Image 1 (tube, rainbow, N blue to C red):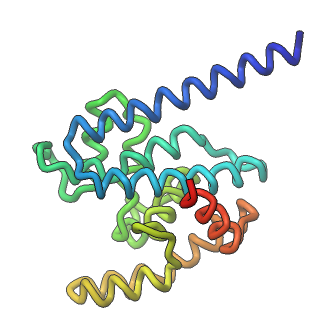
Image 2 (image 1 turned 120 degrees about the horizontal axis):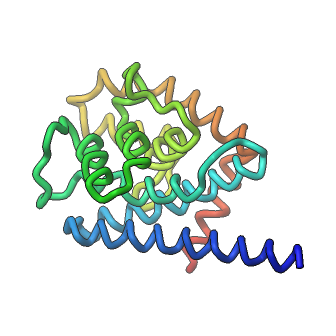
Image 3 (image 1 turned 45 degrees about the horizontal axis):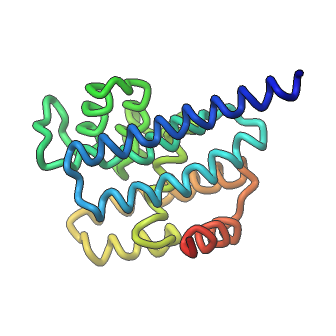
Length: 200
């Protein structure tokens, strides 16, 4: 009976996770996010889940469902149909939207995913969920990229934010080391996981 009960609990957790993810996708469509942003968000969520599972297996307290949901909704604030309230950037707008949609617990995670957060004392990613979403967003574009590649690309495309990029690089690298070492994941693991995902 114990095994049956455990399987039932597991089934319930899987069902709840699927419902939450479907709800997030509905929210993205409701706010009319472009397909490119939705695709990016799904890819970020895929990598975020892999890292979160690694942390969970290593015994760290991480909410995998909240991590995945936040990864899916981290850019919802880029919606052109949403009228911002007090938000100063798309991350804060994402926080406003998830709160309005009854997912207040995701607000601190989505609000701290932009590059500025890593050098801003009050918004720096502190929880595992925040760190995972922040990091996953940096290494996923339409493909998996290293932080070196991502920052190089940003330097080329956005010379106007050179000061931010220079200030954010070291703490972002430190966060990468902390997250991957804690999850017992290396870059080869990420690439292998990404390659398997890309083949689907």
